[in-house]
Amino acid sequence: MRWQIRGGRVIDPANGHDGIADLWLEDGWVLAVGRAPRGVKADEVFNANGLVVAPGFVDLGSHLREPGFAHKATVAREARAAAASGFTTVCCTPDTQPVIDNPAVVEHILKRAASAGGARVLVLGALTVGLAGEVLAEMHALKAAGVVGLSNLDRAIKDTAVLKHALAYAASAELTVFSQPEDYWLGRQGQVHEGAVSTRLGIPGIPAAAEVIAVHRELTLAAAAGARLHFSRLSAADSVKPIVEARRRGQAVSADVSLAHLCFTVDDIGHYDPNFHLRPPLREKTDRKALAKAVATGAIDAISAGHEPHDVDAKAAPFGLTEPGMSTYDTFLPALLAQVAGGAFDLATAIAAASLRPHQILGREGGHLSPGAPADLCIFDPALRWTVTDDTLLSSGRNTPYFNHAQTGRVVATMVGGEWVFQASV
Image (cartoon, rainbow, N blue to C red; front, side, top):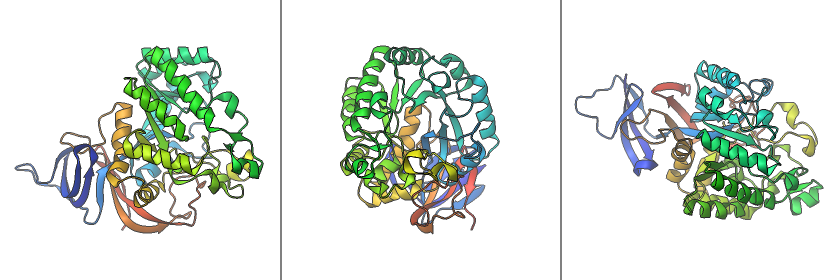
């Protein structure tokens, strides 16, 4: 099947392309941007006039909840919601029940995702058994089952010797370790950023130092082990410099920031709004500005959705008793465009951080529109206005601060491997 995506604004940061052009596809692969190759005629045409055509987004850490927490979300529904939000690939985090610490759970999730007809789902395995931080998971068996990386999420490995051995074992399996850095002893009782807001609200705080110390510790151990390290959801300005310096020394390290940490600060918690209960916590305006600048300069490689859907009961309690996390798929694109409109970075940088760089972090082909690249596309209307309601949200998660707020920008169609997995109804 040959497709002509006609007349859209094609943005391909990898090739420095940003302009009105046709995109030609054949049997799941990119043929050309611009003129059709000689003798090529389209079987079907998609009219992209007034729309942006870009490589599909990738999320490096989505909590898909299944198995074990189907009352919050399911793999199938979230994969379809991801596709409707412009994501062509999402990485499932290992905090399911049972935990993704054995091949059987990996196989179950991959089978569920394959039948969903939504975004492609990749799997992150657990770094330690049960995410308990004590016994190393069988990493080589997990790799054979198909995991693309390993993580202990925000479950701190308190014993430095265990972390040292885990990084060395991951290196032997040639698997990237995805770390959410936080010092256990500084963060164990905290719920929000430590500062004036935590004092005013009377909520235990987590200092930025908890993240910064963990970054230094893990960089040191990963360098000794020869492990490939990726820091997920950075929240503190002071975490950026040691990562940049390690990269200059030749260390294999990358980092992402969640879009929520570019959009909000600890001040948005207001009077105990549980939608802003996140881990890591939202921090100061200076942190937010520094993180946005780091994305603009490439010091931080990627922007993640950090999607964590919850059921209503998980947020229906006093702030400290609610579960952390924000449902972000549905509002990812308009929030990203709002950052562009606000001058944090340009649209090409935003798309590269949401697509090209995550592909590179995963070591997978994609995120660009060169001839021979996979036909993974996000097509969106950057000016379409819509309002977040029960009817417009496709994820099971309703834990979003955008509820009943108008948004600008919406996905019109998403293609994965040459197949349309989402097309908005006319």
